[in-house]
Image (tube, rainbow, N blue to C red; front, side):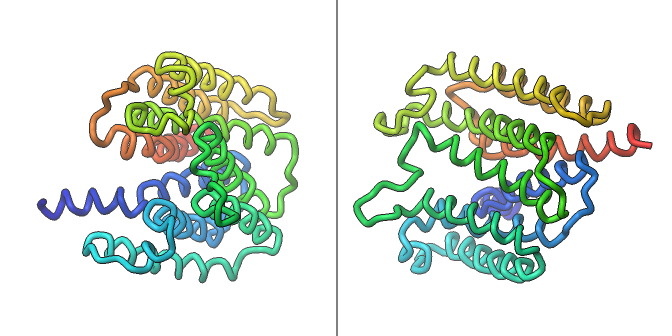
Length: 276
């Protein structure tokens, strides 16, 4: 494996890509609501996502997280601990209210990987609920946390944004569910297992429509946000159209998870040309 391919794989496997996607969604929330950027909450979430996602992926058992023999995974372990250190540093600068939100989301994330009781199942094993739990954590992290950190009231518009973000993340997870359809344990009862490949795609397309039209339920609405949400709607709709059961190697792990990053880039450009 040449060094470019190694770095690309490491970028994905060490959860840096998904952390950048979460960071992008926080930035989009700040732009839509005109929030004063709290760099500490943004960086805390970015580095915390790397540490938490790697724990969920590689460290379901604590001994597997600390006792690593493979060099590649040792490097991921080092990155995880460094990211955790940076997250801890930035955590000292966030408000008490943000800390409460972080604590709730952290507990939910921990229960996703580690069962509450020795003989109980973790939330990750509840396949039918898995994507809803992940969508809820992402929505809370990328909408509620930056709003709370900016000392803004959780009003009606924030609630609508929260529902929209929940739907967006839910749709983004469907290609992963479809990809794993032939490999997931039938007991997981994921959406494609329950309703089939085609109905899952229809569910995602319908969710994209609901996502867009919820925009018009906001009390304060600008053409900039409508245009921005329209771009997201098109991206989600095209995603559902092109998603297949037999996917290319990086379709879900790179391209799907890159959608929030591309959306952020588009929002930044729109912000320059559409906002006076």
